[in-house]
Length: 177
Image (cartoon, rainbow, N blue to C red; front, side):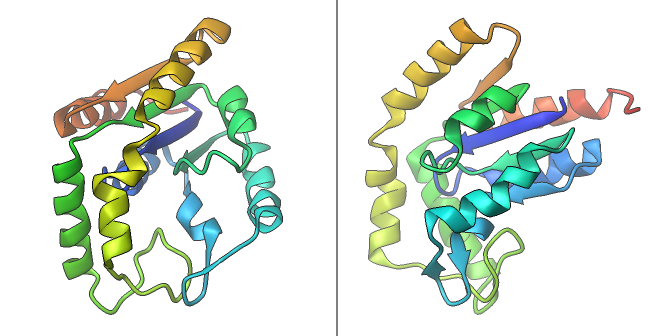
């Protein structure tokens, strides 16, 4: 695992998995939310995100977490040797979002854009429970196509936290060069 793409729904633990894998592999993760959000929850434009993400893709090894399908999606897929899709239960994700809000009350998470203090509003709750999952089937069909076009890529679909924990345990056992 040298170039890892972690995708999934809000609150599923993409950032946490990226941090843990990064620590094991010695790779600093790139968080798409940090590229997307400018200070004070201002959305950056597409060109800004592309400008920041392109140099990451040119590295020998990287971990990029976050879906953001409109930002070098195909380039990330082509460059990745490992793709991890976290497809956790919506209510687990909701619980994690609420827990995250409590843990980072009045603070900015390390995986978020600068000066974006943790918040929780009805629009985001709806995104976590419903709207953010509308393209779930599209993720699966895309992953099937990726497997056909790039049979050597490792593709993991985790539906339970213990699946990700197992990957971390197995990865810890791999001797890094």
